[in-house]
Structure formats: structure tokens, C-alpha cells
Image (cartoon, rainbow, N blue to C red; front, side):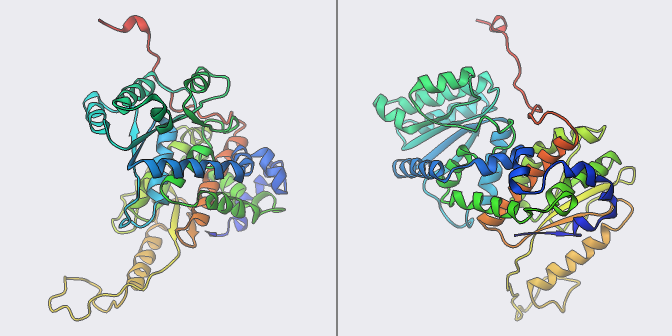
Length: 412
């Protein structure tokens, strides 16, 4: 499902980490007790996800548009899911999925509120920890627009809210609201949100088989059952990441193309506070897309590159009879695979230069399907969990917290 080049277990630089990684365990059940992300993955229950699928089917049947209001890491993850897990860009999904943020300006919010009056719209409020006041006030504006001309019972059927952190005020409110609720598991540490019910609802709404992503993540993780220490690429990558960040190298993710841009935003946010465990620099993750434009790598700090690459090839051909072909330095090229090969070779040569830390890591996806994508999300969430364990730091996500607002600051 995923390939790693070079093979991480063969790196001499990781030999000194064997004793530290040994404590993570050997079998899957031992590793799931150590890695919070893996615990969430294997705690998912198909019966619960099937129920979420039924809820999605009901919303799809009764809605032309589903508005999802979110913020923070939850919003970033949802944007990544919409970008990477949706079908062909030529497909028109029903209903249309619109992701809104609590950062909406009043003018934009007003436009959305006016638009949704009388429309076949459903509204989902998604959050986990420390929701902002603005999120709930934005929800109230949209809820008022949704309620115009509708019976209260119909409004309740069209609204779904996440229940928030256990034993919190937001959970108490969600339970009292009588809206239908979905929940993030209490052990998700504010950050391991992909293999959870709210994400399952989003995947089902866009027509994806949500459980296939769980199966993909579990299959990838189980490949390394009884693999210990650096033989497990998740643990080996986390250890290599510690080494590279401690050397002040700049962690850099290279994406297959611009359709993965939102995935890059999720990666950058997910990894930022674990990056601070091993490096003095903060807000330092860098995302590059594609192979076409040459990146200007600085010489003061080397870039440590992790590249996500799609390994499937497609038999694209060119119009050989074009009377006036556009200029090219590659006149003998006959198909797309040759173009890809030449660009890959040129970029590989570039990354051997002094601006790049060695070794760079290439993660190959067999193809862009639910199983491989589930494996990718599993890999990065689990690697971050392992990084926190190596850094002996709290696994709680703490980068983004809402501004504290005082009632006394409100003016008439």
C-alpha cells in the first residue's frame, strides 16, 4: 500500500534508537496501547460507522447542500479530506458540500444566511476541544436562517452537532439541544481526528466508502505486526525525524500536485507542536507542491524532505500530428511517462545538493484509493504520536486555542 525509499531499517543513523523504540512494543495490540493515534484507529467500530452512513444517506436524500461549520484542526482536516478523498473533479456530487469556518466575516456570513433561507439545506457543526464563542454565534446565525419557514421538528432533522469534549459545557449543551449528535472519541488527544465519526460522516456525504479508509489504515499498520524498533517504518520515521529536527534541518513535505495542498496544510498543523519538541525553530514546516518549479533551497539551513508520490502511471499520449507544436527541449518524447521520469530524475539530482539534508524520504502510494489514503493518514497520525512519545511530551494538541473574550469588553 505504501512504500518507503530508502528502506528506513537500513539507515545506520537509526541504530542508536533501537533501545528507545523497543518500549513501543512488538505486536499490534502493544503498539496501540503506546500510540494514541493507533488506539483511535483500532477502536473504531463498523456498526457505529454504518449508523453514521445511514445518517449521511438521510441528509443526502433531503438536502441539495450540506453546510459544515468547523474551526481549528478539525476544519483543516475536513478540507484535506474533501480535497484528497473526493472522486473525479468532473463528478457532480449531490448534495454539494460547503465547508465554512468560524472566521467568516459578518458580510460573508450574511450572504450565506440570506442564501440558505428556503433552500434544501442541512447544517453540521463540527468541533472537538475549546470551541470559540464565534463558532457558536456563527452557528446561531445560520440556524436562524435555516429555521425560517420550517417546523421545529424539521429543523432538528436538518441539524447535526458534534458533542465536544466529554464532561464539557459544549457536550452538555449538545445533549440538551435535541439535535442529533456525533462525537469524537474522548481519547483522540484533540489531534487524531481522521478515524472518527465526524470524518466518517463527511466521507459518507461525498459518496466515499468510509470504512474502507479504516481498513486501509489497519492493513498498513498490521503489515508491521511483530516488527520492532526500526523495522517498523512508523517508529523508524519518528526517530529519523527527531534526528533531522535536532540538527536544525527544516522539515519539508513535497506533495504530488496542487490537489493535495489542503493535505499539506493539515500535515503542517498536525506536526507543528511535535516539531517544537526537537527543534528550536517554531512555525517552521514547509510544504512544496509538484516537481515543475525549482525550489530555492537556502544554504543556511538544509531542508529535510519527505515526498508523497503516486506510483500509478497512466498511458497519456500526445497529438503527434500537431502542425505547430509548442516549443520544447524534449522533441523525442512520445508519452507522459517519459515526461514524469525525466522530471523525477532531475529533482532527485537536485536533492543531492548541499541545500538538502540526507536522506530524503519518498513515500509511494500504490494509487489514490481509500485503502492507500487511509494508510497515509494512519502513517502521519501515528508518526506524530510516536514523536510525542519519543519527546516524552503531552500528546494533547495545544497550538490553536480561541481568544479569551471578556463580557465587560462588549460595547453597546
